[in-house]
Amino acid sequence: MKKRLTSMFFAAYILLGILGFFLVTFVGSHLLEARLEKSITSDIYQTAHRIAESELVRHNITSTNVESVQSTLSLAANYPDTIIWIINSNGQIILSTRKDISPDHPIDLDGFDPASWGSNYYQIGDFYGYFHDSRLSTIAPITEHLNIRGYVAVHYLMSDLYQSRSSLLWIIQLLFVITYLMTAVLFLFYSFYIRKPLYAITKGASEFANGNLSYQIPVKSENELGYLASNLNYMADKLNRNGEYQRQFISNISHDFRSPLTSIKGYVEAMIDGTIPVEMQEKYLKIISYEAERLEKLTRGLLTLNELDIHKRMLNIQDFDINQTIKSTAASFEGTCTTRQILLELILSGQTLYAHADLEQIQQVLYNLLSNAIKFSPDHSTITIETTEKNGKIFVSVKDHGIGIPKSSLNRIWERFYKIDRSRGKDQKGTGLGLAIVKEIISAHGQHINVISTEGVGTEFIFTLEQAK
Image (cartoon, rainbow, N blue to C red; front, side):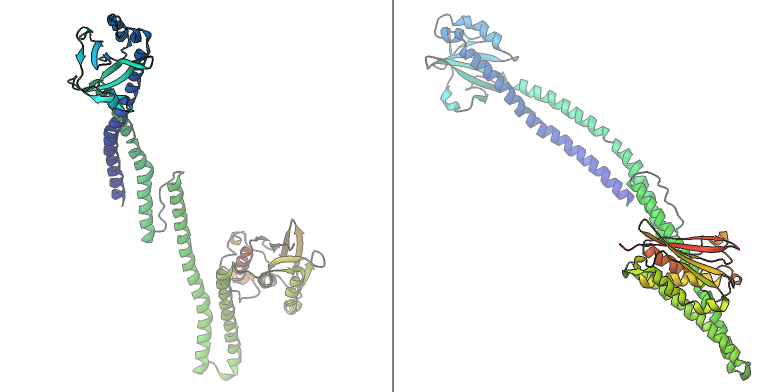
């Protein structure tokens, strides 16, 4: 791909140079000739007309003193090699700037017919066979009292015009060649700023396709290619992390499923083969039920997360009283809190406080946070749930006075299946999915959740909701 693009670019450059040079040469030559012809014709016609209108020429063309006009003709010739004639009404040349013609010996012009010129005021040729070379000729009538007394003819040598055209064309060709060679700098620009980065990006894409997601494309420029390389590097890094996450995810699922299944399988086989006597089976059936409940809770959590991944943009947004939702959720833990003598303290802003969110999912958030708070709180402690409002936002706080979260774990508590040391909690049936579900729900609402925790002091989770208008 690289060589083909470079070859195509180079071939196009060469072809453009050749076509441009021929265009300048042939088309430019034609345009220059036409422009010079028009310019020179205009000049010599004005000269002829000016001579024809002069009083000296008009009054002396029929007199014997016509030679007095000779100096006037010589002064009027404004181009080298230009010949100016005075032609009488009979079509005879009677005076010339070359001084090779005299009124005493006029020269007849065979076929001279000014009427045949029509609207054209100039011709190119040998002027009725008089010249041996090509001339650009123009005539102007000499009139007196509306009568044509003769003509002024001016002849310009075409070879001079061609020479002027060639000189100008050579300058244009030279400028084209210089400009063309200067544009060769584009190859250096292409090679340094386009070809090399493209090659590096192509190599990087090949590395990514072969599974080497840790490869970094070494393009650091600030242009579009640098931006593309940066995005590809970012994409590869994300894919690499997702791969690690998936491997860790599968490992965690395997571990969390394998342990209870091993227990269930072992106890069931022991009861079947009689290793566990009938009078002890109730104890082990309770263990099997306990492990089955763990599996059910883990499966339910995975299904919830999967549903959030698929439908996180399909929220059932509505206005509801968050204070009433907190009261209802807290009431569901009344039995557990009574048994362990844990006090749920509700500090709610106002009688009602309406939030604009998905009611069912926010109930899930409150349930998970309260469940965690109770799980890691000591008996005879207090858990505080508080709501406040500020700048169109509702802040909900769930604060316990439990064992706290180690500082090293604060950044990982939102990861799926991440669990702090199991020996810290009263409940050993945690799946490590509760806080991951909370994070997904709050993020789907476009809101934020933060945690403040000190070991041995307690933990506070604070999340925001949009206040209903």
